[in-house]
Image (cartoon, rainbow, N blue to C red; front, side, top):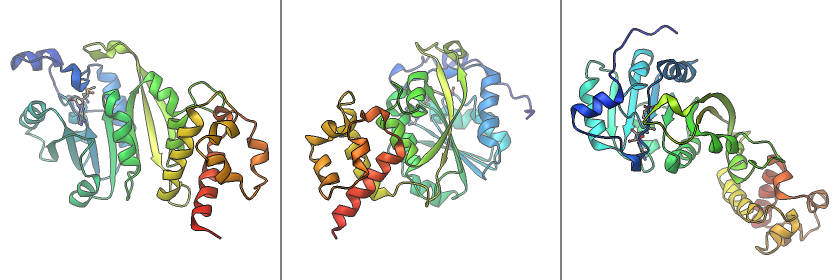
Length: 288
Ligand code: SAM
């Protein structure tokens, strides 16, 4: 994609104009690598929806590219001053709406209702809230066409991990229950201002269709199983689930399928087996 040349100052200069500094508490490490910004804009806008929700637009370096590509851009920024400043600096774009609010608490249902059910999501967010906001979007219906989020490398590795690796765990499986995840590209810490301590990675999430995703009710049970299993990931599955009573609930009618799993460690068990356990527990709750 070739972009109309849009000129945005370096983050340091924009902030200096109003005598401000990046706020560490809000994870304000701004992307300054134009090539990377364009790669993110290209990835999110492939087969684009009519609207994109950008969470944490910061100083708007990605936002301007999105405004060039999308019919509607809705940018949600927690820092009030940055939000006000962004609205003012990008006022030439009448397809941009800036909402000054915490992306964790925002009602996604209201956003969809107000704008459109046909949407993509993109975000470069601090670690402390990125996974929570990701899951809020993944769990919302109607779901996004795609979600492109940037994570610090360690978290990205956990989201895409394979069973049997040290990165594999509750986060991997909880995500696999509702979305297909694809790693897109890595970003060196030097591409940000100020430079963070770790590198980052951009991932693409496609929410699974209703028939392929674990149901909301089973996801509650899945979380319970995962909490117990991965708090003792070096034990066998049977021993890890014993204390919480989950093992007895699962096996009290001697379901054959558990004889193979019981001696395996939680981190070697495939997501689909965990989904099956949640299904068995759900069936038992309903009674015979
Ligand atoms: N997207 C911009 C970029 O790539 O240059 C800024 C990225 S910076 C890592 C994270 C941005 O998210 C900051 O602007 C910060 O103020 C904002 N932010 C942090 N926590 C947030 C939250 N809970 N909801 C919405 N925005 C948040």
